[in-house]
Image (cartoon, rainbow, N blue to C red; front, side, top):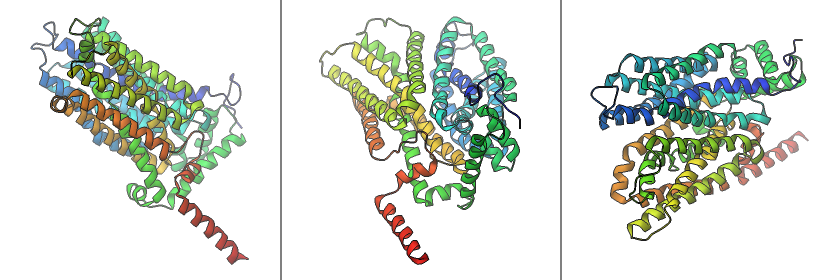
Length: 484
């Protein structure tokens, strides 16, 4: 039997890490496309704009919102594509769309081209948060599943920061060419990567699945660890065949899966409604208010860089401790700290309205804490948990549904945050976000199970009520009595 560890030690994680990095390279490219809006719209609206005439506020608003609108149907399309043709072709499709996005921007500066290019970003967003987490989960063994699963947030934040920096130092078209190179590079490199073992087994390619698992685990094809893992995937999929063919119907009607779905939806919405999105969009004004009317010490793009650096720091922390701390403690801690920071920010605005003086550093600190916690726990852990509490058959559809709901929530926040804040006051808006975070923390304590290094059947045991556990024990006793 062929061995796949070459000059690495047997059982090395190197192939899984390499594969996960290449799987998430489109996420880095997507993060860059999201970060593009910050420095480039400032340029395109300025008197020195390379476009004549400069963009209007309405055109910029459409550019910003288009991606979130197209992301909703794209989530289901990417889930369908990944289940039908495979994770690998779906991911190559995502990079192809990203290439088209940057080619459009290089080809034309007309409003329709810019808005259409931003609409295509919605497809790359769906791929980044539906296909990439699923693919990463399915190539990872239990001991590194959380670590590799949290890479999606790290690459997203790093992509944002990368674009903030290059957007500040390079000319407009040079930035576009650099961004075009990212998905193009992925299209070339990813050809050498394998398909997901779960997908291969689902479609009867058992021998190829064994070879892929052996390569990913740096072991021989006849290694007991490899064969046992393949058997576990087969058994999981055989159990899935007994349930309804209509995935959403099964998720809704099955008691345990319905509870798991509610958990996945709750943590996904908490990720979007924790206040990070409006805080990022309102950051410039918060810096200005904190400066007491004086000129802020940082330019708008330098502010974006500072917040991008905070996000990267948070995502690095998540990647480094998620396997040691566990999913539940990390999600609980970041929800609590984020809630406290939102309430502190709201209190600062309320005291300012009443004429009371509080330290000018308080809103900046609260803002940074919120962004840090979002990247350190709320974002990565919600994605990891959703991938871990569903089997192959349901994983894609559930990920698409939760992502669609969170994308729509993000769209509503971008559209209505400022009008609503102007009516009820900024302090009320931030108290709302703080309340959402604190309720999320309570929900995590009472409902969310720990998923670290656990199989789905073990996780579902925690979702059973005491009554259901007693009924199962009673049924087992009754069966034994009948047999005797």
